Amino acid sequence: MSRTPHTAGRVAMVSEHASPLAALGGPDAGGQNVYVAQVARQLARKGYRVTVYTRRDSAGLPDRMTLIDGVRVVHVPAGPAAPVPKDQLLPHMGEFGAFLARQWAADPPDVVHAHFWMSGLAALTGTRGLGIPAVQTYHALGTVKRRYQGTADTSPAERLAIEEAVGHECTRIIATCSDEVAELKAMGLPEDRISVVPCGVDPDHFAPVGARRLPGARRLPGARRRLLAVGRLVPRKGFDRAIRALAGVPDAELLIAGGPEADLLGVDPEASRLYALAGEYGVQDRVTLLGGVGRARMPRLMSSADLVLSLPRYEPFGIVPLEAMACATPVVATAVGGQLDTVVDGTTGVLVPADDDHDLGAVVRSLLADPDRLERYGAAGRERVLGHYTWDHVADGVAGVYGAVSAIRSLSGVVR
Image (cartoon, rainbow, N blue to C red; front, side, top):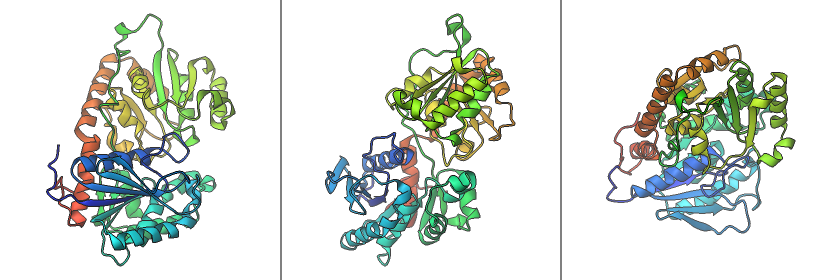
Protein backbone atom coordinates (compact mmCIF):
# COMPACT_ATOMS: atom_id res chain seq x y z
CA MET A 1 0.00 0.00 0.00
CA SER A 2 1.30 3.45 -0.91
CA ARG A 3 2.14 6.05 1.71
CA THR A 4 -0.45 8.58 2.74
CA PRO A 5 0.39 12.20 1.87
CA HIS A 6 1.03 14.50 4.82
CA THR A 7 -1.43 17.07 3.44
CA ALA A 8 -4.46 15.64 1.72
CA GLY A 9 -4.78 16.69 -1.90
CA ARG A 10 -8.22 17.88 -2.98
CA VAL A 11 -9.48 16.22 -6.14
CA ALA A 12 -12.58 17.19 -8.10
CA MET A 13 -13.86 14.44 -10.39
CA VAL A 14 -16.42 15.34 -13.06
CA SER A 15 -18.57 12.48 -14.36
CA GLU A 16 -21.60 14.06 -15.93
CA HIS A 17 -23.67 10.94 -16.73
CA ALA A 18 -21.94 8.20 -14.73
CA SER A 19 -22.57 8.56 -11.03
CA PRO A 20 -20.54 6.42 -8.63
CA LEU A 21 -23.83 5.88 -6.76
CA ALA A 22 -25.74 4.46 -9.75
CA ALA A 23 -27.01 0.90 -9.94
CA LEU A 24 -25.20 -0.87 -12.77
CA GLY A 25 -26.90 -2.44 -15.76
CA GLY A 26 -28.78 0.51 -17.27
CA PRO A 27 -28.06 1.75 -20.79
CA ASP A 28 -25.66 4.44 -19.55
CA ALA A 29 -24.45 2.76 -16.34
CA GLY A 30 -21.43 0.51 -16.56
CA GLY A 31 -17.66 0.60 -16.59
CA GLN A 32 -17.26 4.35 -16.14
CA ASN A 33 -19.41 4.32 -13.02
CA VAL A 34 -17.28 1.53 -11.55
CA TYR A 35 -14.04 3.30 -12.48
CA VAL A 36 -15.05 6.61 -10.88
CA ALA A 37 -16.32 4.93 -7.73
CA GLN A 38 -13.33 2.65 -7.28
CA VAL A 39 -10.63 5.22 -8.01
CA ALA A 40 -12.34 7.75 -5.73
CA ARG A 41 -12.49 5.16 -2.93
CA GLN A 42 -8.84 4.18 -3.32
CA LEU A 43 -7.68 7.80 -3.43
CA ALA A 44 -9.62 8.52 -0.22
CA ARG A 45 -7.96 5.56 1.48
CA LYS A 46 -4.60 7.05 0.51
CA GLY A 47 -5.50 10.34 2.18
CA TYR A 48 -7.00 12.39 -0.65
CA ARG A 49 -10.28 14.25 -0.37
CA VAL A 50 -12.40 13.61 -3.43
CA THR A 51 -15.55 15.35 -4.64
CA VAL A 52 -17.40 13.75 -7.56
CA TYR A 53 -19.66 16.06 -9.57
CA THR A 54 -22.41 14.25 -11.48
CA ARG A 55 -25.69 15.42 -13.00
CA ARG A 56 -28.83 15.40 -10.87
CA ASP A 57 -31.11 12.91 -12.63
CA SER A 58 -33.81 12.70 -9.96
CA ALA A 59 -35.65 15.39 -8.03
CA GLY A 60 -35.36 13.31 -4.87
CA LEU A 61 -31.57 13.36 -4.73
CA PRO A 62 -29.91 15.50 -2.05
CA ASP A 63 -27.44 18.19 -3.08
CA ARG A 64 -24.58 16.22 -1.54
CA MET A 65 -24.07 12.64 -0.43
CA THR A 66 -21.17 10.81 1.18
CA LEU A 67 -19.89 7.70 -0.61
CA ILE A 68 -17.28 6.85 2.04
CA ASP A 69 -15.23 8.98 4.41
CA GLY A 70 -13.20 11.24 2.13
CA VAL A 71 -15.51 10.95 -0.90
CA ARG A 72 -18.60 13.07 -1.40
CA VAL A 73 -20.90 13.22 -4.42
CA VAL A 74 -22.39 16.53 -5.56
CA HIS A 75 -25.51 16.39 -7.72
CA VAL A 76 -25.24 19.20 -10.25
CA PRO A 77 -28.44 20.89 -11.49
CA ALA A 78 -28.08 20.74 -15.27
CA GLY A 79 -31.13 20.01 -17.35
CA PRO A 80 -34.19 18.19 -16.06
CA ALA A 81 -33.96 16.33 -12.74
CA ALA A 82 -34.81 13.12 -14.56
CA PRO A 83 -32.96 10.43 -16.53
CA VAL A 84 -31.70 11.67 -19.91
CA PRO A 85 -29.73 9.46 -22.37
CA LYS A 86 -26.13 10.59 -22.38
CA ASP A 87 -26.18 11.35 -26.10
CA GLN A 88 -28.80 14.03 -25.37
CA LEU A 89 -26.91 15.77 -22.55
CA LEU A 90 -24.69 18.13 -24.55
CA PRO A 91 -27.16 21.09 -24.44
CA HIS A 92 -26.96 21.00 -20.63
CA MET A 93 -23.18 21.10 -20.32
CA GLY A 94 -23.08 24.90 -20.29
CA GLU A 95 -25.23 24.91 -17.17
CA PHE A 96 -23.10 22.13 -15.68
CA GLY A 97 -19.87 24.04 -16.37
CA ALA A 98 -21.26 27.30 -14.95
CA PHE A 99 -22.12 25.49 -11.70
CA LEU A 100 -18.55 24.15 -11.50
CA ALA A 101 -17.10 27.61 -12.18
CA ARG A 102 -19.05 29.09 -9.26
CA GLN A 103 -18.05 26.27 -6.94
CA TRP A 104 -14.38 26.33 -7.81
CA ALA A 105 -14.00 30.11 -7.82
CA ALA A 106 -15.05 30.03 -4.16
CA ASP A 107 -13.29 26.81 -3.18
CA PRO A 108 -10.76 25.59 -5.78
CA PRO A 109 -9.55 21.97 -5.79
CA ASP A 110 -5.89 21.08 -6.40
CA VAL A 111 -6.71 19.15 -9.57
CA VAL A 112 -9.76 18.38 -11.69
CA HIS A 113 -10.22 14.98 -13.34
CA ALA A 114 -12.91 14.77 -16.04
CA HIS A 115 -14.43 11.50 -17.21
CA PHE A 116 -15.91 11.32 -20.73
CA TRP A 117 -15.80 14.04 -23.37
CA MET A 118 -18.81 16.05 -22.15
CA SER A 119 -17.40 16.06 -18.63
CA GLY A 120 -14.20 17.46 -20.12
CA LEU A 121 -16.16 20.28 -21.76
CA ALA A 122 -17.89 21.16 -18.48
CA ALA A 123 -14.68 20.84 -16.45
CA LEU A 124 -12.74 23.19 -18.71
CA THR A 125 -15.56 25.72 -18.43
CA GLY A 126 -15.26 25.41 -14.66
CA THR A 127 -11.47 25.80 -14.52
CA ARG A 128 -11.11 28.58 -17.09
CA GLY A 129 -9.19 31.52 -15.65
CA LEU A 130 -8.62 29.81 -12.30
CA GLY A 131 -5.29 28.11 -13.00
CA ILE A 132 -6.55 24.69 -11.87
CA PRO A 133 -4.91 21.79 -13.77
CA ALA A 134 -7.40 19.59 -15.63
CA VAL A 135 -6.85 15.89 -16.35
CA GLN A 136 -9.01 14.17 -18.99
CA THR A 137 -9.99 10.49 -19.28
CA TYR A 138 -12.21 9.84 -22.30
CA HIS A 139 -13.27 6.23 -21.49
CA ALA A 140 -14.45 5.98 -25.12
CA LEU A 141 -13.57 7.98 -28.23
CA GLY A 142 -16.07 9.27 -30.75
CA THR A 143 -13.64 8.70 -33.61
CA VAL A 144 -13.58 4.98 -32.87
CA LYS A 145 -17.34 4.74 -32.31
CA ARG A 146 -18.10 6.52 -35.57
CA ARG A 147 -15.62 4.38 -37.50
CA TYR A 148 -17.34 1.17 -36.46
CA GLN A 149 -20.97 2.26 -36.08
CA GLY A 150 -21.26 4.72 -38.96
CA THR A 151 -24.79 6.03 -39.32
CA ALA A 152 -25.90 3.97 -36.29
CA ASP A 153 -23.80 6.22 -34.03
CA THR A 154 -26.19 8.35 -31.96
CA SER A 155 -23.51 10.69 -30.59
CA PRO A 156 -24.00 14.44 -31.16
CA ALA A 157 -22.51 15.68 -34.42
CA GLU A 158 -20.21 18.00 -32.46
CA ARG A 159 -18.60 15.19 -30.48
CA LEU A 160 -15.43 14.71 -32.52
CA ALA A 161 -14.57 18.40 -32.66
CA ILE A 162 -15.22 18.85 -28.94
CA GLU A 163 -13.17 15.78 -28.02
CA GLU A 164 -10.20 17.15 -29.96
CA ALA A 165 -10.57 20.62 -28.45
CA VAL A 166 -10.77 19.20 -24.92
CA GLY A 167 -7.60 17.19 -25.57
CA HIS A 168 -5.71 20.29 -26.67
CA GLU A 169 -6.91 22.47 -23.78
CA CYS A 170 -6.59 20.08 -20.84
CA THR A 171 -3.36 19.75 -18.89
CA ARG A 172 -2.95 15.99 -19.25
CA ILE A 173 -4.78 13.05 -20.80
CA ILE A 174 -5.03 9.65 -19.13
CA ALA A 175 -5.45 6.89 -21.71
CA THR A 176 -6.50 3.46 -20.51
CA CYS A 177 -4.44 1.44 -23.03
CA SER A 178 -1.74 1.72 -25.69
CA ASP A 179 -4.30 1.42 -28.50
CA GLU A 180 -6.04 4.54 -27.20
CA VAL A 181 -2.73 6.42 -27.30
CA ALA A 182 -2.48 5.64 -31.02
CA GLU A 183 -6.03 6.91 -31.54
CA LEU A 184 -5.31 10.12 -29.62
CA LYS A 185 -2.15 10.74 -31.63
CA ALA A 186 -4.13 10.25 -34.83
CA MET A 187 -6.45 13.02 -33.59
CA GLY A 188 -3.42 15.33 -33.48
CA LEU A 189 -3.06 15.34 -29.70
CA PRO A 190 0.51 15.55 -28.36
CA GLU A 191 1.89 12.26 -27.06
CA ASP A 192 4.01 13.98 -24.43
CA ARG A 193 0.83 15.00 -22.60
CA ILE A 194 -0.66 11.47 -22.59
CA SER A 195 -0.16 9.03 -19.70
CA VAL A 196 -1.35 5.42 -19.69
CA VAL A 197 -3.22 4.16 -16.64
CA PRO A 198 -5.41 1.06 -17.18
CA CYS A 199 -8.77 0.20 -15.69
CA GLY A 200 -8.87 -2.26 -12.84
CA VAL A 201 -10.71 -5.07 -11.12
CA ASP A 202 -11.38 -6.07 -7.52
CA PRO A 203 -9.48 -9.37 -7.07
CA ASP A 204 -11.14 -10.04 -3.71
CA HIS A 205 -14.56 -10.12 -5.36
CA PHE A 206 -13.50 -11.56 -8.72
CA ALA A 207 -11.67 -14.65 -7.51
CA PRO A 208 -11.85 -18.39 -8.21
CA VAL A 209 -15.02 -19.89 -6.73
CA GLY A 210 -15.70 -23.59 -6.21
CA ALA A 211 -14.11 -26.54 -7.95
CA ARG A 212 -12.68 -25.92 -11.40
CA ARG A 213 -14.21 -27.82 -14.34
CA LEU A 214 -10.67 -28.68 -15.45
CA PRO A 215 -8.80 -30.92 -15.93
CA GLY A 216 -11.09 -33.41 -17.60
CA ALA A 217 -10.84 -35.95 -14.81
CA ARG A 218 -12.76 -33.56 -12.55
CA ARG A 219 -15.70 -33.29 -14.94
CA LEU A 220 -18.74 -35.49 -14.71
CA PRO A 221 -18.98 -38.12 -17.46
CA GLY A 222 -20.63 -36.62 -20.53
CA ALA A 223 -20.57 -33.09 -19.13
CA ARG A 224 -20.24 -30.42 -21.79
CA ARG A 225 -17.33 -28.02 -21.80
CA ARG A 226 -18.50 -24.55 -20.92
CA LEU A 227 -17.83 -21.41 -22.94
CA LEU A 228 -18.95 -18.08 -21.48
CA ALA A 229 -19.42 -14.68 -23.13
CA VAL A 230 -20.32 -11.60 -21.09
CA GLY A 231 -21.44 -8.10 -22.03
CA ARG A 232 -24.24 -5.85 -23.17
CA LEU A 233 -26.46 -7.38 -25.83
CA VAL A 234 -25.31 -5.25 -28.74
CA PRO A 235 -23.95 -6.46 -32.10
CA ARG A 236 -20.44 -5.08 -31.59
CA LYS A 237 -19.80 -7.46 -28.66
CA GLY A 238 -19.42 -10.37 -31.09
CA PHE A 239 -21.76 -12.91 -29.49
CA ASP A 240 -22.79 -13.95 -33.01
CA ARG A 241 -19.22 -14.99 -33.70
CA ALA A 242 -19.16 -17.12 -30.55
CA ILE A 243 -22.33 -18.90 -31.74
CA ARG A 244 -20.84 -19.62 -35.16
CA ALA A 245 -17.67 -20.97 -33.53
CA LEU A 246 -19.75 -23.26 -31.31
CA ALA A 247 -20.86 -25.17 -34.40
CA GLY A 248 -17.27 -26.42 -34.68
CA VAL A 249 -16.98 -27.39 -31.01
CA PRO A 250 -19.52 -30.23 -30.67
CA ASP A 251 -18.90 -31.11 -27.00
CA ALA A 252 -19.36 -27.57 -25.65
CA GLU A 253 -22.16 -25.28 -24.49
CA LEU A 254 -22.20 -21.49 -24.74
CA LEU A 255 -23.64 -19.26 -22.03
CA ILE A 256 -24.20 -15.57 -22.83
CA ALA A 257 -24.59 -13.27 -19.83
CA GLY A 258 -25.86 -9.76 -20.38
CA GLY A 259 -28.78 -7.68 -21.50
CA PRO A 260 -32.17 -7.36 -19.81
CA GLU A 261 -33.54 -9.69 -17.17
CA ALA A 262 -34.11 -13.21 -18.44
CA ASP A 263 -37.90 -12.85 -18.68
CA LEU A 264 -37.49 -9.85 -21.00
CA LEU A 265 -35.13 -11.50 -23.49
CA GLY A 266 -38.05 -12.48 -25.71
CA VAL A 267 -38.62 -8.86 -26.71
CA ASP A 268 -34.94 -7.88 -27.00
CA PRO A 269 -33.96 -7.47 -30.69
CA GLU A 270 -30.36 -8.63 -30.26
CA ALA A 271 -31.45 -11.66 -28.23
CA SER A 272 -33.90 -12.55 -30.99
CA ARG A 273 -31.13 -12.24 -33.59
CA LEU A 274 -28.83 -14.50 -31.58
CA TYR A 275 -31.55 -17.11 -31.02
CA ALA A 276 -32.22 -17.16 -34.76
CA LEU A 277 -28.53 -17.50 -35.54
CA ALA A 278 -28.18 -20.41 -33.11
CA GLY A 279 -31.03 -22.13 -34.94
CA GLU A 280 -29.43 -21.46 -38.31
CA TYR A 281 -26.18 -23.12 -37.17
CA GLY A 282 -27.96 -26.01 -35.46
CA VAL A 283 -26.67 -25.20 -31.97
CA GLN A 284 -29.84 -23.84 -30.37
CA ASP A 285 -29.83 -26.66 -27.80
CA ARG A 286 -26.31 -25.66 -26.70
CA VAL A 287 -26.75 -21.87 -26.47
CA THR A 288 -28.27 -20.29 -23.36
CA LEU A 289 -28.93 -16.58 -22.96
CA LEU A 290 -28.92 -15.87 -19.24
CA GLY A 291 -29.96 -12.23 -19.39
CA GLY A 292 -28.43 -9.78 -16.98
CA VAL A 293 -26.28 -11.40 -14.30
CA GLY A 294 -25.60 -9.39 -11.15
CA ARG A 295 -22.10 -8.61 -9.95
CA ALA A 296 -22.53 -10.91 -6.94
CA ARG A 297 -23.15 -13.95 -9.17
CA MET A 298 -20.50 -13.24 -11.80
CA PRO A 299 -17.38 -14.70 -10.09
CA ARG A 300 -19.02 -18.11 -9.64
CA LEU A 301 -20.26 -18.05 -13.24
CA MET A 302 -16.83 -17.12 -14.59
CA SER A 303 -15.15 -19.72 -12.41
CA SER A 304 -17.46 -22.39 -13.81
CA ALA A 305 -16.33 -21.77 -17.39
CA ASP A 306 -13.56 -23.58 -19.21
CA LEU A 307 -13.03 -20.49 -21.37
CA VAL A 308 -14.33 -16.94 -21.43
CA LEU A 309 -14.79 -15.59 -24.95
CA SER A 310 -14.43 -11.80 -25.27
CA LEU A 311 -14.96 -11.09 -28.97
CA PRO A 312 -15.90 -7.43 -29.49
CA ARG A 313 -15.27 -5.91 -32.88
CA TYR A 314 -13.92 -2.86 -31.06
CA GLU A 315 -13.54 -2.09 -27.37
CA PRO A 316 -12.19 1.06 -25.64
CA PHE A 317 -10.74 -1.06 -22.81
CA GLY A 318 -12.73 -4.20 -22.03
CA ILE A 319 -13.15 -5.19 -18.39
CA VAL A 320 -14.48 -8.73 -19.01
CA PRO A 321 -11.05 -10.29 -19.71
CA LEU A 322 -9.71 -8.85 -16.44
CA GLU A 323 -12.66 -10.20 -14.47
CA ALA A 324 -12.17 -13.64 -16.03
CA MET A 325 -8.42 -13.60 -15.41
CA ALA A 326 -9.02 -12.61 -11.79
CA CYS A 327 -11.21 -15.74 -11.52
CA ALA A 328 -8.30 -17.81 -12.97
CA THR A 329 -10.31 -18.53 -16.12
CA PRO A 330 -8.39 -18.37 -19.42
CA VAL A 331 -9.58 -16.00 -22.13
CA VAL A 332 -9.94 -15.98 -25.90
CA ALA A 333 -10.14 -12.33 -26.92
CA THR A 334 -10.11 -10.29 -30.07
CA ALA A 335 -6.94 -8.26 -30.58
CA VAL A 336 -8.60 -4.88 -30.14
CA GLY A 337 -8.41 -1.94 -27.74
CA GLY A 338 -7.36 -2.63 -24.18
CA GLN A 339 -7.48 -6.40 -24.75
CA LEU A 340 -4.17 -6.03 -26.57
CA ASP A 341 -2.66 -4.96 -23.25
CA THR A 342 -4.51 -7.08 -20.74
CA VAL A 343 -4.51 -10.51 -22.42
CA VAL A 344 -0.99 -11.84 -22.98
CA ASP A 345 -1.21 -14.12 -26.02
CA GLY A 346 0.11 -17.56 -25.16
CA THR A 347 0.40 -16.76 -21.45
CA THR A 348 -3.03 -15.80 -20.04
CA GLY A 349 -5.09 -16.71 -23.08
CA VAL A 350 -5.20 -16.33 -26.84
CA LEU A 351 -5.68 -13.22 -28.97
CA VAL A 352 -7.50 -13.68 -32.26
CA PRO A 353 -8.13 -11.26 -35.14
CA ALA A 354 -11.34 -9.27 -34.98
CA ASP A 355 -12.43 -10.32 -38.48
CA ASP A 356 -14.86 -13.19 -38.98
CA ASP A 357 -12.58 -15.08 -41.36
CA HIS A 358 -10.40 -16.45 -38.55
CA ASP A 359 -11.29 -20.04 -37.53
CA LEU A 360 -12.28 -19.38 -33.94
CA GLY A 361 -13.69 -22.88 -33.53
CA ALA A 362 -10.26 -24.40 -34.19
CA VAL A 363 -8.70 -22.16 -31.54
CA VAL A 364 -11.31 -23.20 -28.97
CA ARG A 365 -10.99 -26.90 -29.81
CA SER A 366 -7.22 -26.73 -29.43
CA LEU A 367 -7.47 -25.10 -26.01
CA LEU A 368 -10.16 -27.44 -24.68
CA ALA A 369 -8.03 -30.41 -25.73
CA ASP A 370 -5.17 -29.26 -23.49
CA PRO A 371 -6.35 -29.02 -19.85
CA ASP A 372 -2.85 -28.39 -18.53
CA ARG A 373 -2.49 -25.39 -20.84
CA LEU A 374 -5.81 -24.01 -19.64
CA GLU A 375 -4.82 -24.40 -16.00
CA ARG A 376 -1.51 -22.67 -16.72
CA TYR A 377 -3.24 -19.77 -18.52
CA GLY A 378 -5.75 -19.40 -15.70
CA ALA A 379 -3.09 -19.22 -13.00
CA ALA A 380 -1.03 -16.74 -15.04
CA GLY A 381 -4.11 -14.56 -15.59
CA ARG A 382 -4.81 -14.32 -11.86
CA GLU A 383 -1.16 -13.47 -11.21
CA ARG A 384 -1.22 -10.76 -13.90
CA VAL A 385 -4.29 -9.12 -12.39
CA LEU A 386 -2.74 -9.06 -8.93
CA GLY A 387 0.46 -7.56 -10.28
CA HIS A 388 -0.95 -4.89 -12.59
CA TYR A 389 -4.71 -4.39 -12.49
CA THR A 390 -5.97 -3.97 -8.94
CA TRP A 391 -7.77 -0.72 -8.18
CA ASP A 392 -4.95 0.16 -5.79
CA HIS A 393 -2.49 -0.02 -8.70
CA VAL A 394 -4.83 2.07 -10.85
CA ALA A 395 -5.19 4.73 -8.14
CA ASP A 396 -1.42 4.89 -7.79
CA GLY A 397 -1.13 5.55 -11.52
CA VAL A 398 -3.81 8.24 -11.42
CA ALA A 399 -2.17 9.85 -8.39
CA GLY A 400 1.11 9.90 -10.28
CA VAL A 401 -0.52 11.96 -13.01
CA TYR A 402 -2.00 14.33 -10.44
CA GLY A 403 1.43 14.80 -8.92
CA ALA A 404 2.93 15.59 -12.31
CA VAL A 405 0.49 18.42 -13.07
CA SER A 406 -0.33 19.90 -9.64
CA ALA A 407 1.02 20.64 -6.20
CA ILE A 408 -0.30 17.28 -4.99
CA ARG A 409 2.63 15.01 -4.18
CA SER A 410 2.70 11.95 -6.44
CA LEU A 411 2.25 8.67 -4.62
CA SER A 412 3.63 6.48 -7.36
CA GLY A 413 6.47 8.73 -8.50
CA VAL A 414 6.33 7.26 -12.00
CA VAL A 415 4.27 8.57 -14.90
CA ARG A 416 4.57 7.24 -18.40
